[in-house]
Picture (cartoon, rainbow, N blue to C red):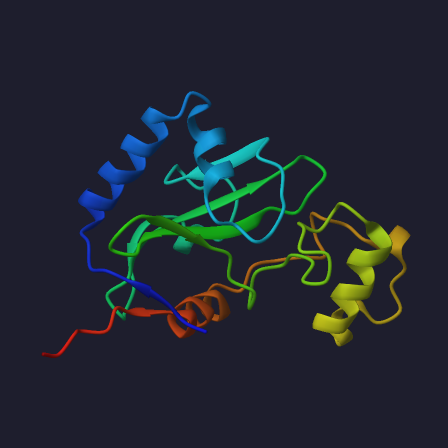
Length: 170
């Protein structure tokens, strides 16, 4: 089922995100924690419209997609986890978050970042990328080299899932 976005400028989205972070007594941590994220990951390391020290660099920060979706590309994860990429966007009423599946390495079975359960992570990785993980054991998993983002697949996932809000016709 699709989600919908409302048009907004990158400046206006930035202002809404900054205001939401400023209102939260826990700052960025509380703000992210209150978003409607369906994947669990630690907030120890996070990038929200920052300098993209990690994550898919070309998707990080404030962007305008080909469909007109304005979003803020973000990434977060604990030291033991592979970071999870997500976006924050405006649906016309509130800030929303979306974690793309395609091109975004996270455990789709446990709905957690890779790094929290080696056996479950390997099983899920073998299902999602059979050739890349053929013959690997859980002891062989390396968060630094086994997983990578696919920006093209992430963009396609976002474009397929988050659509322009329908126009009400009288």
